[in-house]
Amino acid sequence: MNKILATLAVVAFASPAFAQQATDFTTVDADASGTVTWEEVQAALPDVTEDQFKAADADSSGDLSSDEFASIQG
Image: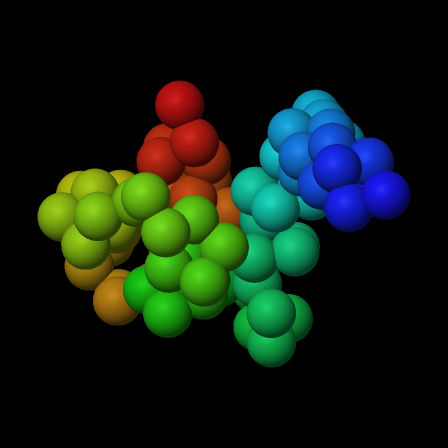
């Protein structure tokens, strides 16, 4: 039974729908402010480095617009 549950968990987290949800701008923008902070990015995308975040922050505002956020996606 535990093996089945573990397998289902892996499949659920590896699915494209889960990946899309985790990296969707509106999902990452937890406070619905219209921008995402370093903390919000870290919570959703822990592999993104602070240097990548700063490089994406084209206007040096300290947070990312949806266009700036898109640049760290690919």
